[in-house]
Image 1 (cartoon, helix red, strand yellow):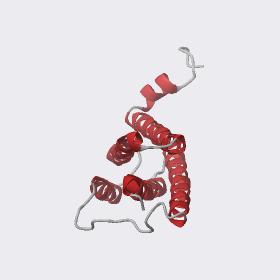
Image 2 (image 1 turned 90 degrees about the vertical axis):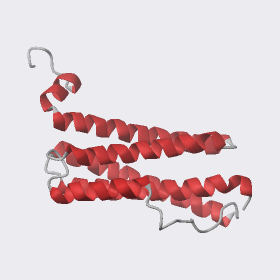
Image 3 (image 1 turned 135 degrees about the horizontal axis):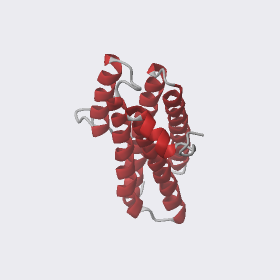
Image 4 (image 1 turned 180 degrees about the horizontal axis):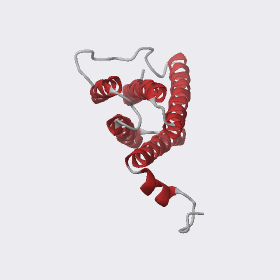
Length: 176
């Protein structure tokens, strides 16, 4: 593997790990959520993360077959990543009660994970060497920004349903 491309190996390993953790969080939050809006959002996010992980793993495998990447990711189990710390917090929140409307903190965990993904992609975006690499990272970045917006919107929905309806709803002032 070319040493100049080592960033790509690190990026792919880190982003796949982070997206896998987000997928697990969203699956658990959906299972624990009684609200149909929350459940739908968490299901959607979980499916999108699963699809993203599959695509990244396919790309990673292709690069490994082409000898452009090493076939293994290097992990440092003695170090707890920020994503792991956030996941531990989420698990405590989810176990303590409803991960949906009663515990907006669980949404904050998802928001934090999305912010980490955005920061990770933004860190590696300037290192891209081809338009194809840049395009892939741009797509990942836009996906995670959209997830961030969806979670912030859901957080608003649970914290102030009437305010959310007034701001996001399509009804007129007369309630129609």
